[in-house]
Amino acid sequence: MNRRKAELALLFNVVIWGATFVLVKSALHEISPVLFLAIRFSLATVALVALFRAWKWRALTAPHVTGKMLAAGSMIGVFLFAGYLLQTVGLLSTTAPKSAFLTSLATVMVPLLAALVYKIKPRISEVAGVLAATLGMGLMTFEGPIGSIGRGDLLTFGGAIAFAAHIVATGHYAEQIGYQVLSVTQVGAASLSAVSLFWWVETPRIQWQPLVVWAILITGLLCTALAFTIQAWAQHYTTSTRTALIYALEPVVAWITSFSIAGEGLSGQAAAGAALILSGVLLVEMKPFHRRPHP
Image 1 (cartoon, rainbow, N blue to C red):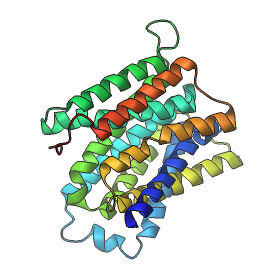
Image 2: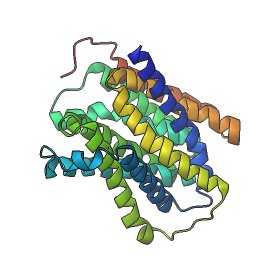
Image 3: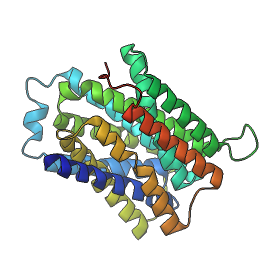
C-alpha cells in the first residue's frame, strides 16, 4: 500500500512537471527567464523553510551537519539551477514537447556520468540505450539542413547534462546528508544562484499578468518545493528504477498537454526521435540484457 501511494505521488510529479512545459513557455513572453527562475526558487525556498519550520534550525545547526555536507548540498543546487537555466532559456526557441523529450536524455546520461565518477564499466543495455537516445536526439534536432541544430535544442541538451549531474551527485550524497538538509540547501543554493545572476546576464523584464503569477506559483510551490519533498518521501518506498520509469512518462504528458492547449506537436521525424529517446530510457532503466545488481 505504501509503495502504491508513493508511486501515485510520483505520477503526480510527472503530471505537474509535464504539464508546465507549455505554461512556462507561454509565461516567458512576459518575464525574462533568469528573473523567472530567481522568483521561482526563492518562493520554493521560503515554502520549504515554512514546511520544516519546527525542524529547520535544529537540523541545519545539529552537530552532525558539517560544512562539507552544506557545501555538497549547495553544489547539487548549482547543478539543479544550471539544468533549469538551460532548459528555461532553451524554451524560448524550441517547442515544449521537444524540450521535454530532450530533457529526458538526463536519465540516459546518468550511467555514463556514473561510470566516469565511479570508474565502472557501463552495461550493454546502458550503451544500447545511449545509442538509441542519441539517434533519437539527432532525429528531433536535425530537422533542417544537414548539420543544423536549433539554439534552443542545444541549450536544452546542455540542461539534460546538468540534470544528469544533479542526479548522480544527489545519489552520492543523499544518505550522508539526509533529505531534509538536502532539500533546503539545494533549493536555497539554486535560489541564490538565480538571484545573483539575473540582474547582469539579462535585461530583467516582467509584466504581472495572471499567466505569469500562476506560472510562478505552480512551478515554485508545486513543481519545486512540493515535488522534491514528494520524491524524497516516495523513494523510501519504491526503487530508483521504478521512479525513473514513472518519470519517463513526463515528456509524453508534455507532448499531450502542449498539443491540447497550444496545438504544439511534433513532426513525423521528431516523433520517431521521441520514440527512440523513450526506448533508450527504458533500456537504461530496465536493463533487459543483465539481471545482476549494478555496482
